[in-house]
Length: 371
Image (tube, rainbow, N blue to C red; front, side, top):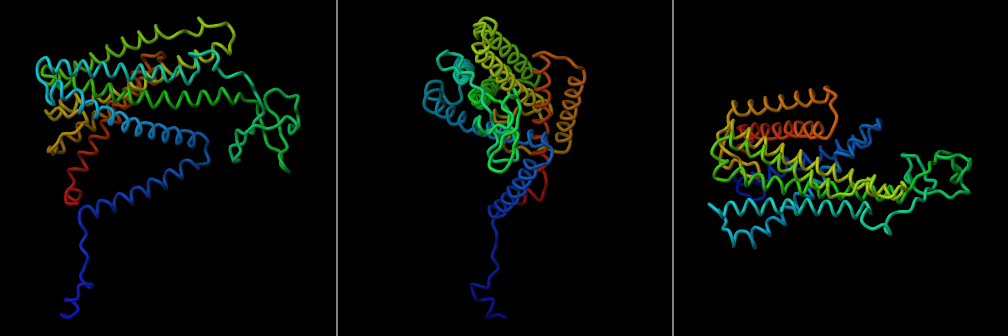
């Protein structure tokens, strides 16, 4: 036995904290992947649709975080920090905040331009022609949405729906405008991506305002900065609405008005998305400041701080209040853009509170601390 203990190959291998962390990460990724496969193949169409929508939004947020973080870091390293200093004070701090808000306006302007370009609302010559054609309408087939020749249609005199013979099978077909659908998909894609980048730019600007000398004094002043950001965004949205053309001001032909309407609809949707994302995050920052007495960083972190059950359950309670408020707004039946902004902000604030409270709880577990 002693001889066996002296053999190097028979020694028990010890795992480091990095090994254990990677193991948990791999198991979590495996479980998460299986859940995604289950949801996107669920029998109910609504479950599949919402699953794909959440996946698309998540990927858009991840891409926006990477793009904005890289651009912001380059700007800080090579422009702002050399000119204003890494930790500006006085007028330099005011200049830093002003520059951050100017950058947000640039990101929002870029979003508006990209939406207008992909909606083809700027150049009339680039607008898709109204060329409808028969396409396969069967979500279980791999060629769903592919065009079908007129000769394959069994009942060619029908207007919108019919049956086509493909090989030895008969499949359902519908009349669709593929060019317009492609334009709408591209517009939706880029509007959400730039909306999230503009939202993170607004979070950065609002975070700098919260960390300025006046607003970081206490949580009430921090909450006041959130109110100022709300008024600022509503003013910017009013200006952008005045600058965008309206559908009724364009040509009377519906094909000419459609790109302008598409631009307006997706621009409003992008503005609402960035408003809810930024304001909810800044609001929860101020509420966490009230609970802990510590103003988190712009990234939402409290380096070196450990919170107990009182702080954790207080933030959980705030999450419940936000959830109840969201349900009340929904059941009230109020419509309009302000109601949509309020509902979206409350629901995202619920998610932020749930995230930060859960993170504090997990960080307080002795088992996870040892790992």
